[in-house]
Length: 96
Image (cartoon, rainbow, N blue to C red; front, side, top):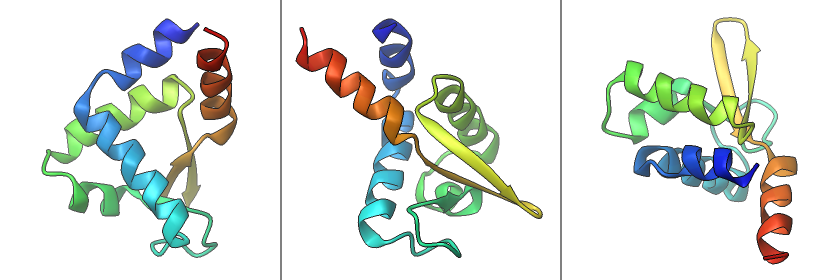
């Protein structure tokens, strides 16, 4: 089970995306309408020097690993951390 999470976390770009989302939570989500730490794909692309298709791939890997959640609002997609999964990983690691 942890193997899938670690595989998703093994890429520096994915860790950077998770860090952006985490910082967005701390900042109150300055790129969203509801202030819950979501970032639009556009904001993520602006923040990471990779092609949009590469970032999209990394977001899909993170979503498949259940590390992030997405929400579509009209033409925009917003991503946020999946705190349930992250807390589950923390709990599993603390039991090692």
